[in-house]
Amino acid sequence: MNPLRAGIVEELKGLDTYPYCGHYALMGKTEPGFQDVDYILNLFGGKVLEARRHYLEFVKKGVTAGRRPDLTGGGLVRSAGGWSALRAMRKGESRMKGDERILGQGDFVETVLKAAQE
Image 1 (cartoon, helix red, strand yellow):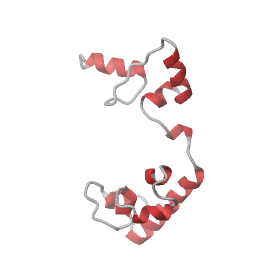
Image 2 (image 1 turned 180 degrees about the horizontal axis):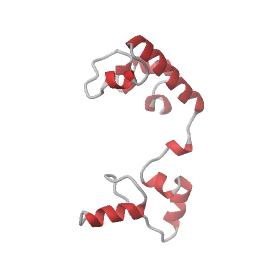
Image 3 (image 1 turned 90 degrees about the vertical axis):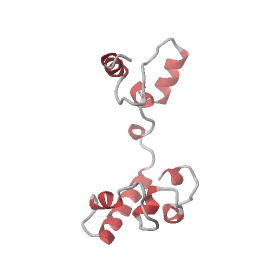
Image 4 (image 1 turned 135 degrees about the vertical axis):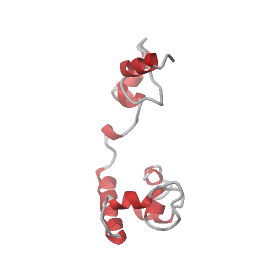
């Protein structure tokens, strides 16, 4: 859905013709390559056509729901409590330890890095 949210395609149907997204492979428009299409479609149904239909319903609900703050950002952004909290931290002296290889709060990241002696 990133091409849709970024405005590269104007509507959900546009993902069917945009070859640089996972949706394109899920809809059978290309060989999946890196994506395990069978695994993903099996989450939505036992037969390919049924699974694609349920997958599309799921994606449509996501599009109409809009952006959810609990699902935006990631890593440091989410750990800090969102963009506004992160901006506030930047203005002050507060620092949070982060490492893209480790998911979790700053104190957890520090514990893991100490255990790994990094």
